[in-house]
Image (cartoon, rainbow, N blue to C red):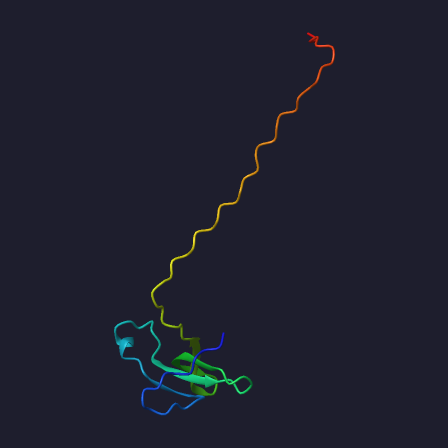
Length: 110
C-alpha cells in the first residue's frame, strides 16, 4: 500500500536519511534500546516513501565495538474506528423430511 509523502512542516524532507540519538527513557527501563531515531526511505523503483523507527545498541564484536541497528515500520496513526458491518446471516435450509415408508397392503408385520 503506497504511503502518502510526509506532511509539510515547513522543513525540507531529506529522503533516504534519518537521525539516531541517545534514548532518554533507557535510564528508566534498561531493556529499551540505547539509541533511537527514525528513518525516511524512498524506493528508487516506485518512489514510495516509507517511515521507519531506528533502534541501535553498541555491541562488542571480534574486531571491536560496533552499532547493531534494527528498523521497525512506523504504524499509521489510528483514526476513529469505523463500525464493522454486521455479517448477513446465511439462510439455513429446512430440515430434511423423514423417509416415509409406503406400505401397499396396509398390514403391519409384528
